[in-house]
Length: 289
Image 1 (cartoon, rainbow, N blue to C red):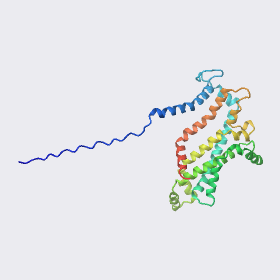
Image 2: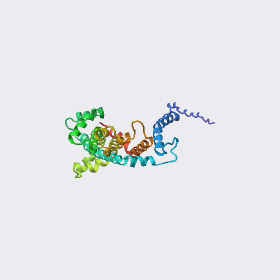
Image 3: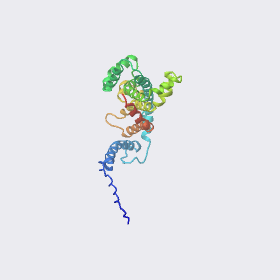
């Protein structure tokens, strides 16, 4: 007679249960974001309402829609000239800042020369100096050069104040590009300049977009330099033109709001186009100093 041994079946080990991490509920995220969005968009909403509704209306909605305010500021108050001046200063500042920052940032990243660290520290220290403290020295320099009441004075001032941050961003971005890529181009017969344009420059697109957009937007919105260095109405920029829509005893809120919309639309369009490059350019340029 044979006996069969029945082995007990091993029970499966109970699954390891981990305590859930402290998860944040959705309302804890959406409520602060919603309040911040409301706080940010309400002034823009009122600007749009005042710009598009008829004068004398107290409606909470821009209805009936009218373009009289825009026609008044564009033709009657000279905002077409102010817009051209701001566009000229913004584009010229963008080009000059980007070109100089590109050359200087590449030199800081690829060449090790005496005084390099001191130069970087000096550029960082300039960021702590407010622009208002430089008004008198800049005015004296521009008066000596005959640039007072000239749009080129605004371009030079904007370029000088935008260069330190732009140089640091470009330099950090170039350091993230392996130099072996350039060396491979040199081996293939490229000169250093040609290798730069063929290898490095295409990879610097996000950084150039970030630097150029900041230079354009800062020069477009700058009020202090335009107010101090320009005193003829046909050379005013949009911020100065908006300031002159406010009288001593009254203000035309419709014209002021319409001018604000005209000044805000280019900036919104610029951010809408370059937003996908902006974060990449800022983060890549901030990895290495």
